[in-house]
Amino acid sequence: MQTLQTSPKASAWRIFWIFTSIGLQSFGGGASTTLLMQRYFIDKYQWITIDDFAYLWSLCQLAPGINLVGFTILVGKRVGGIAGMFGALIGLMIPSSLITCLLAAGFKEVQHLPVTQAVEKGVIPATAGIMLLVGLNFAFPQVKKANKEGLLPLAITVMIILLATVAILAGVPVIIVLPAGGILGIFCFTRPLFRSRKDRAQ
Image 1 (spheres, rainbow, N blue to C red):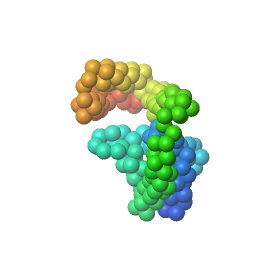
Image 2: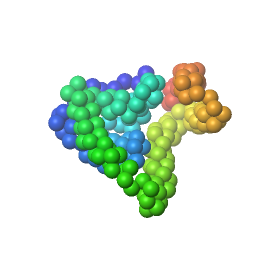
Image 3: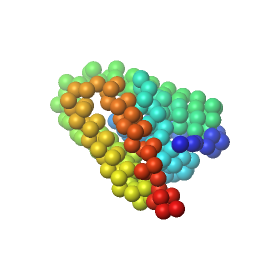
Image 4: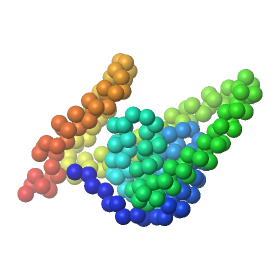
């Protein structure tokens, strides 16, 4: 079972400023925000591991609504307790929301310009590249576990990814795809087959 330490590692004020910085840098939406959170909390300060980060992210996928907001709350609470949770949410949402409102109000005046349309054509693939990097960061723990548990869990993970991709392309609703992936996870990853090599050798 996945367990998380809950002792605060940073003050709410510091978490607020970190998330304010993230909110002001996260051009491109949720993918860039998630990438910046990985770089701050995993790489720079090492307050959270990539395994815990992926675990919190997976919890957010099981709930409806804006997952990034829920993810921000979970990370803030994980790092700074209840106060950190509020610091994270306020820091991420308020400054960036104000800037977004101002940009949206001004966009109407320039959306017809050729340069604006050219910018949009360049931003979309750049955002796709950020999403790819975020996905690779989430996949890294699975690859790392392959050294301990063997290649079969990694192969099953890839199979679930492919099945989910095919299902979405076929028009299956996300509300069905995600629970189905969870059920497959229960069936596949709670079996004794996936004990570590060391445990199986004993």
